[in-house]
Length: 123
Image 1 (cartoon, rainbow, N blue to C red):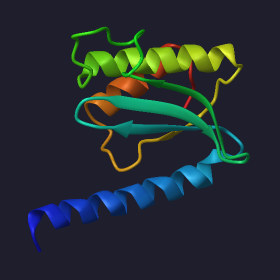
Image 2: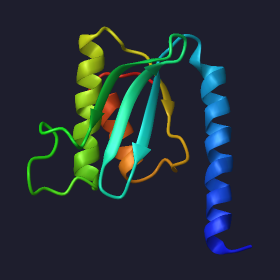
Image 3: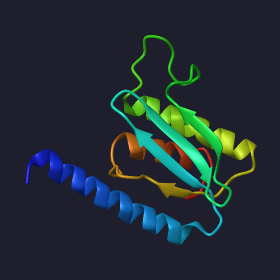
């Protein structure tokens, strides 16, 4: 098996495993879903019961990264996590379920989650 195919298979298995755990733990709480690319990181709170996004934040916003700054690092992820938590608390959302998707809890994903916890989200 080629390396790229093996890595893709591992990520797909991890994604399914994490998603099943999130579904079991949800109990009506919104899901904090993360997407990470090489240049940006996106986070959103999704209400799976009604199928809509409640709050979103990403490094594409001018509040997070200004012109000329690199948005694919931990510092940007910390800003996104803080901004997302602030917006969630303004809407009265305190408890969420963390869905890291196919990504390991390491680096930018961990920085975003820790920042959201520091700002008041519970998961």
